[in-house]
Length: 378
Image (cartoon, rainbow, N blue to C red; front, side):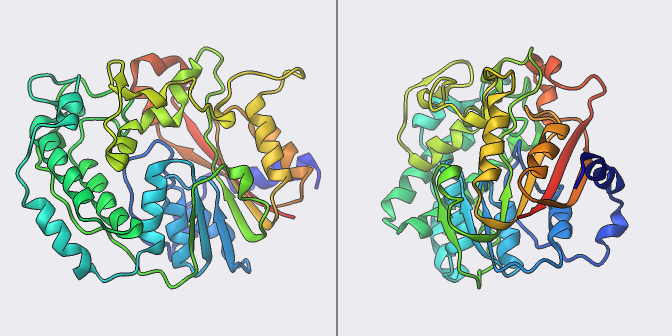
């Protein structure tokens, strides 16, 4: 297919209307506030793969697992992969746990009955008259300190523990004083931060498919064959003025790693980030801001290698207009690796990161943001 034909496909489906989804059953998913969340474009993802013969699917950068949750409910044997600890926890909760709610409710009831204690989380993340400096009010971090230690005392297997940790993270997401990440905090206490931390059962859907949860480099997961592989890699920023350290996902959600591991690590900076979330620690090639000898972004080369080496019948790529690879470059990569079946250009509202003082130059002048979806057949 020529680049002209590809462009016409992209423009033809730009900004689909609601009527496209009138007869579309979009599975209900659950998750937290998340910079890379696909909740808003999930109907587009489901619609674009509708009618394809799919039995096995891989979500290679699963994040909060919303897409993987939807795939499983659509009847696909789903593999969810991500290197983040919170993604592994969500994956076990929603894709692998099968015990009845009653089993978990007794633990949640006990956790909710605990009195708060002043511990590591309260020391670093709880505040009373320090609005703008801490992500939670002290009453809730004290509750967190008590709950987190008690979860370890239950001595559950990994999947059962993941359900309780998911419940805890969902509850924290309802009382936080953030924009949806933990790289900085709001300047004043927001309304929800005054609520009391209270755990509820996650909305699990009792998967009937054969699912897997993987914690690995995406390049190591694409050699096995899948009918469908979905890619939503970290985007980085295409603005040369944007400090590369500001767009690394591990810095945004360092707090959840500490909640999951309960390892009480050394912290640094105004946001009390984990030492292992420093910008030089385990850098992600998809967020790389440098160019190679041919003046192409290294991140774009990584996407090219990822698609070229994927063993799948269909590849669905999601990418942001603010990422390192441009729309034109993505189309060129796709044209070299198969047949473009469909494409979408979805309008987003003002990006969440634009509310951060140091990111004004990162956002487009008109505050526009687009998400691209490309469906490729090999």
